[in-house]
Image (cartoon, rainbow, N blue to C red; front, side, top):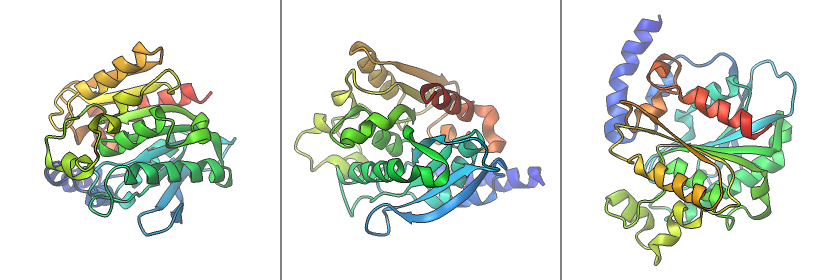
Length: 285
């Protein structure tokens, strides 16, 4: 059975890599972690169809309240849907975290800072309502992949977005995130940020200061979409201002591979789940 599922999933990896798919097809066939379950779906954190979220919790409950991971998916700020990330939600929930996966508005409906504002609204909702699902709204780790890692990073390092709620953010776990990519030389970043008058203002490296929470920045050495130098640049800035940042590079892993390594059948490619969970556990003690 498992072999058959892997054979069905393998061709989808090429589709995802070539088209930045929301991973719905991939998510539908890969085996999920039985230790996590979907507790609530399609919960509104604001107005409109793109301001909704899903919540995953450890199966069986247990001692609480538990720390919370808010995971923002990628898709070049112009694609993606939370429905494709059940494998992420269940993987992190199985490690003991209440895990929230929000949608957010996309280009062309919005450009910067619209998707960051939606991310902030989702985190504020989580802080207020995590207790209803066994979570601790004062112990939040922001995580994400690619464009989602950008959103997580901006919320973590730039105090403008969350205000007083930022004190609940205990850590940032970014997977293949773009943190230092101005000037905008590719179509996706031009469409998302090109209208903003000050490119530097849109960059996480610009805003990182000593008030930022600890960061774990993960990347693959073979990532040519968002190069590892982004993680290295943000980590260097955080360290320079007295913050804590760790970079982990996975040999032979590319931009989509770092995400699909969260799925059970592909964890041998990179210990992403273990590294994120260990970091989140450490910073939320």
